Image 1 (cartoon, rainbow, N blue to C red):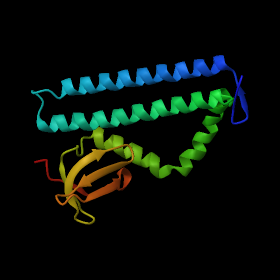
Image 2 (cartoon, rainbow, N blue to C red; image 1 turned 45 degrees about the horizontal axis):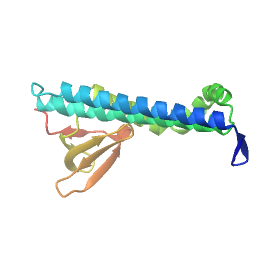
Image 3 (cartoon, one colour; image 1 turned 180 degrees about the vertical axis):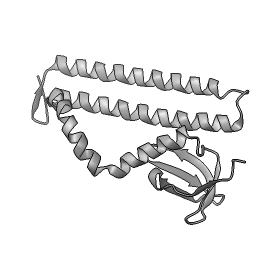
Image 4 (cartoon, rainbow, N blue to C red; image 1 turned 90 degrees about the vertical axis):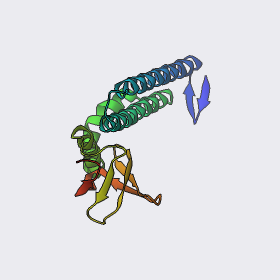
Length: 174
């Protein structure tokens, strides 16, 4: 028996948990590589520049979702090793989801808006855009689950919450 933070942990349970985390890490790395290869193949020579930008944007979004899922699984394994009843924790998440949903309304709005930006192809990484609110003009450098980054020609970066993006002019579209 090992003692971590006042919790007795069996060596066998610790080794099993480490092996599980390593397995999840291997699956994560394999899925990430498969996604990268699939998107590279999809964005081949026959794809238009706008299509390649959209593929890059979707690739970044899926990679971000995959990373968050991996971190959640690892966190649950660590909690399990430390003696936390993960089954009860997952059962209680139903109630907590409502509470967290109310507390993180803006984050949920950002996530939904980020997906809408991608699905509706409003703009993509590499597009030149102008924010009507303040006239900031630049190139979209990153579209994430929560924010979109736009860099101007001087290197200034404007980070906008996805749900606050309103009245954006896409200069890359005709």
